[in-house]
Length: 137
Image (cartoon, rainbow, N blue to C red; front, side):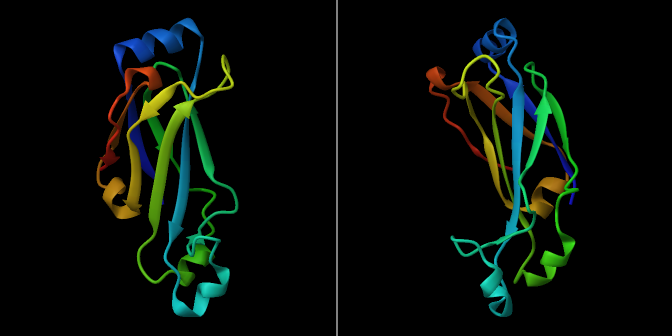
């Protein structure tokens, strides 16, 4: 259930996060579509959550690699899925210097197997830069 990502920053984002001594947080949610027999376990949007609490991985404000262990995944719930597990990954500033997120970042939403093949790079820029985020991989 583990995989790796790499977070890169625009020059402006790197400078702002360094000046503010701000960190970065990677939010990870494992999920899947329910088998008909497991629909009673689905959440409010009709999906099976594969962990009790979403994973959060902190990395330095300069960006760089992040290893997602998948340690919080409840493997018993895999039997409830009608297909392969999926993963959603979002990146934000750690909100140490501001209560608002400062970053607009690429994101992942799709089959877990697609992100396990090789590290996926997610690029971030300051929200004010109006960076056009991309769905990865």
